[in-house]
Figure (spheres, rainbow, N blue to C red):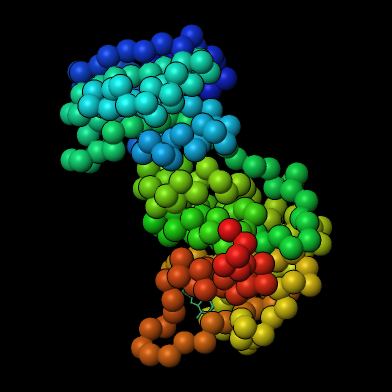
Length: 285
Ligand code: SAM
């Protein structure tokens, strides 16, 4: 892999390059970010779409490389974000549509793609505040579910998402796509089950875990008495005993019909908007 991407802390002198070859080594390095290992090694990830990239840069996310299609050249917003990338020591690539398609693995790619530095928050430095809600996900496996949950957590006014145990990567292309930009707004934490439980115990919050065997109707819980940590189970196996037994409340969403359970992202959305009910209003936004 190209050295520029190997050293996450390294700063480069900002520059603009024109690239049309699929075998260009920088293009190859960017394409490799669809692999988890390369994302981990470099501490970076890919995000697509001009508006989303502009927002991310404005929110202070470090952009390493901006890639745009020749057809986007000269557009004022593209020029502005390119100038900001260069000013921050990043690299700007002007590429053919063929190169952009191969980076994003799409026939009709977005005109602009960014390589950003990943940001992980530390759970041991997280102190809960009144009125806050966090979503904790036990071994979430599906990238689309995780992306949808990050987007929903953002929309419901949650303060962060905690990945417990071995979860799918929040910085994969599929997850980032499903977040629709919320990956840049929602702090993401990760922890083992033991670390999570230790932190939750000290945090002063209440763990409300959802479980198909929960005896409590989710609409009867007081979510405002303490900051709420909403704990959701794995898609296949649900919550293990170790996590379920540590919960302050075990909530269930009543169901009709033939389905045994709701999809994880749907169940999280139903829960989140109930937990956040008193904080959300049409006037607030
Ligand atoms: N077979 C799994 C089980 O036995 O738990 C189903 C898991 S379900 C697809 C994924 C997660 O969504 C569950 O662990 C739970 O957190 C949540 N969930 C889905 N439907 C629910 C319901 N009706 N009530 C409470 N939680 C639910």
